[in-house]
Length: 121
Image 1 (cartoon, rainbow, N blue to C red):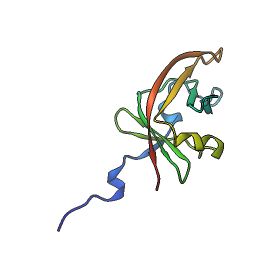
Image 2: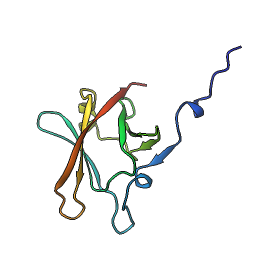
Image 3: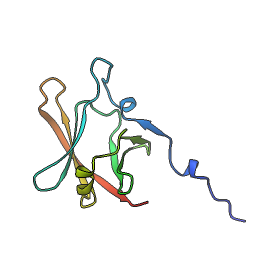
Image 4: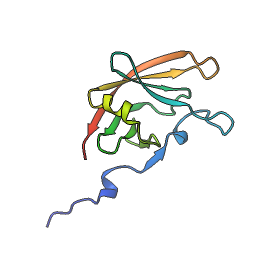
């Protein structure tokens, strides 16, 4: 008989994004927005740096669930499903431009392209 791991050991525990950013407080919450550029490319804006780098994103086409996978394999749930108007652009994307905004001015400080893996459950 082959021993197969259960689903609970196949994927790491899911945490929230707020637990994984620097400087998110009740009076200074994390701002995250997923937007679509005029050319259809997906951009993610955030105003707090992450404690560890994001290795890739995962998106489920059926549930519109959007997850962040950190460098150590930890899964971070975006918290809400994406609106259909945004989700339809995800299926044509292979990467997402991720832009850290200055917390005070709102101007872009740095940006990186991060791979996107699409799932269809």
